[in-house]
View 1 (cartoon, rainbow, N blue to C red):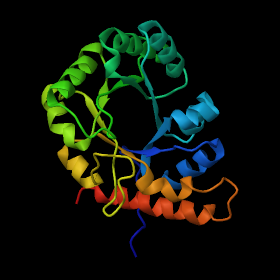
View 2: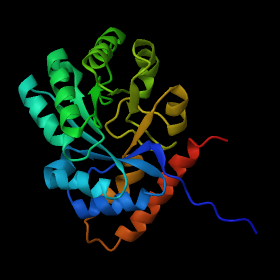
View 3: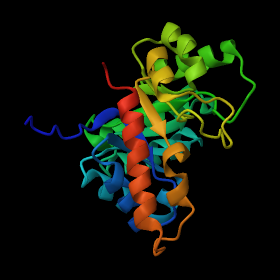
Length: 244
């Protein structure tokens, strides 16, 4: 009888923890830990738990993607990015619409505070926006590249433009949906396999896996079953992009 091979965490998969309770976020992270290597801490969870949310995920051996989409004057962004850099986060999002000086301030603050470990990701065009221009996208990717960002956030449909403009940048793609899943408020979605085939570096996986858990209270008796189902869906995502 052959040995059972344990699941391998995929560093290309980021689980979205968009909930307002840190304990629930930890349960979600634990459920998908065999399959996903990145945890996304966004506005809702960070507003609830602050840097403790990042610490909780790094203690679970996740790379942490802090998705706060900073957009302010350069001084404020630089200082705020430095605070995020001290949390142990791996990535932080900055809005490219903030311009070159703001992006550079964020990149520098983040790098200095993290000892060069953390990188900024430039948000190009939100996946909820249906109208987009290749020229605008190219400009924003160029701003991210020239400011020293390590990557960009873009839709799967924009990957060809991004790779042509800055092939060296990490390409982080939200709007990932399992076949048959609803689009929710995302105008531009893709399946995991299609996004990887198109050139995505990291897939941001949210409601296609987490929706049932997000609808429950932390003390709901239905939570264990929902977490189990969430793990099954996470495995499906991981299996769909596994070679061979």
